[in-house]
Length: 105
Length: 448
Image 1 (cartoon, rainbow over the protein chains, first blue to last red):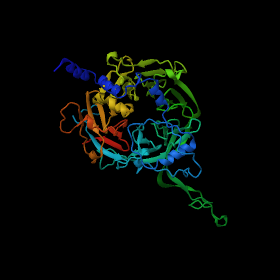
Image 2 (cartoon, one colour):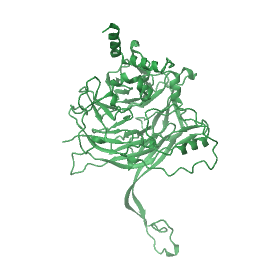
Image 3 (cartoon, chains in turn brown, red):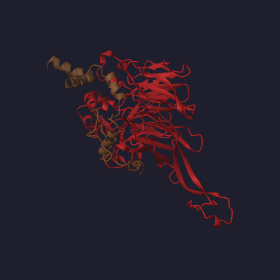
Image 4 (cartoon, rainbow over the protein chains, first blue to last red):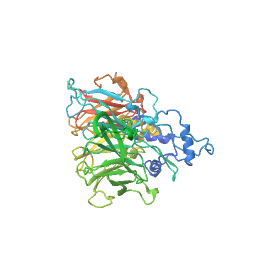
């Protein structure tokens, strides 16, 4: 066994974080060096999907018909501008009566 | 060692109840977002992503089963918050309940504060078990009687009726937060409470909803210089002038409201020094504190960061007095946890009634308890497979080395979609509430 292989194994054991960091940088070479920096924080402050206007918002709501599985990741949300200009006929009717929580069932 | 709790290493935990739907197809609205016992432990409140609150009440102990503590059954449920649309910013405001905090009980009614990202509401939950009957001018169904048929006069009386529990919003505290509210905390003076968002903390009077005082503001003049955000805040349990707030950089600041109106200057700053040689891309992210809780005694506080739970003595700012590893085996998985955003999961933590044991959640529906006195820890699982009444929970183990023993689960087999972020411990007894994605599990100490 060569000395360099030994060193590699030892390194990973001493600092798994650093080897994980190397893995990440290998996959995303353009990743900035300030992980907790303002980019990440500002993305956090702006949590919440932006819509072009309230009509667009109602259109998007109408599309979410089926139940969604909870996901671990909140996907990167790009600006949503809607597929077309909503007209009164397109907008959904008043929200249906609220469903009770299944915990109370 | 089968369990940890109450300072007695022989505590065993049993399944008691599970609430919620069994099917795997989870609607987003059913995701539980907060769990909180009231001060007596008789009531247990949950909030979910759909803006709904469900309150469970413990049944009184029955004479024929004195060894079995009462079950929790539904007491009240209501829609606390609804989705809103901010027209000015074209932003959706989620109805998800971020936190629920109970007020100490002062009269027959119960009060709680519930909050979403922008608005805090004070709810009154009251019981009605009598109704007036025998009106002169109205029939029992409310229709007015023909006055010609009224020949006698009588005094209406209150008669018992089936118990009705009503929830009504008494105050709405709105428009005080530009950023997303992450914490609310009722002061021990029972008159004020604080609400914290990413950059500011406000102080409210429970009676006054059109005014609040800003007590902490960490917003930089130039947003490009933003380096940290507020992640949690809490009032001291008995010193009404003291509160703490935690940050995304792993520091906790303790403030004294007697010092000045604006508490930007902290009275104490708690931070564990970091070895610069060990610093990596992930260091700051995993040091971000997701929860801070004072002990009941007020002498200690506990913080939760991504991989550990730390206990701090308020008299020592330089480092925690105790550190417990929740799931250290994840340190060698940080790359994938960053890619799937799990590294940003916000786990909460809680103390037991006498501050001898602390609890927090993990992945794969595992949760961990650390007994501070006996220096023992245990990993338990909330799953439907262990849900036979009064069945004892078996400790779980994650295998980290190459050899996996029977009954152990390997790190790569953990389900990172099954996360336990919210747990609560009854203030007096060994009863715990553990929330999986959409189910609420109640476990109790095995009593012989």
